[in-house]
Length: 260
Image (cartoon, rainbow, N blue to C red; front, top):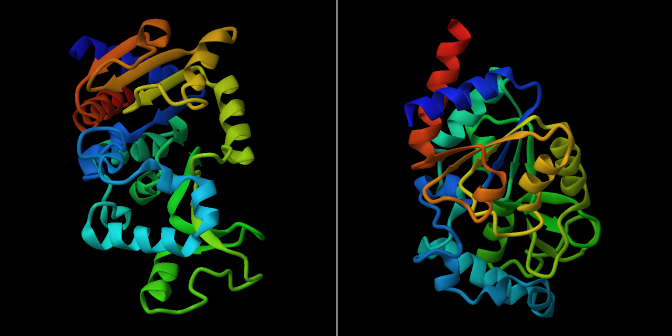
């Protein structure tokens, strides 16, 4: 493991455009269960509740469910704090090592940890956005109005359109801007650091494939508790363990090499 950490640190330090791709596994140490794992949200709630069709049928019903999940603590992203893996990535960006983080998560923890260049592939559940004019506001403001019984709580204050959590629901497309930036970053990338994702959800899982198919191919460093579905096809260095522990070691190795 120590030799692999050293090799990964050398790759990152010598990269001209290192990019990170993160999934739910980076946030489990912050108390946010993987949606699909035992104890995850889909074991408590029908995933169909987070489909755009069902939302549009009855937005108020969804917002009531959302508030109930938050109050019960079963889905309260606002109270989560970044863990050592998030902070290590932010530090690597500050050092100029990581140029961009592409995240499948909707929890805002990369930004909370200090990362600046973050592409939110699936949006952000800490924001509410109008489905008509796309203006946004902090979701806690909508929650507070809704909890207080404001009849206009889930209406946009600019155009009266319906407000929805600014995350990609089932049946919705990946935001065009996030898709475009991710594709550009994948083409520029020479080292891809994959953290906490099983690489089973597309199109995000296409990113490691695309960095391997271009010429010259990028190197892929994977950090997971278990090997991803694509590790045999894309991974050059596999570091098994918790994201927090491995990223702490990796950051330390990078900082030591920078001193040398």
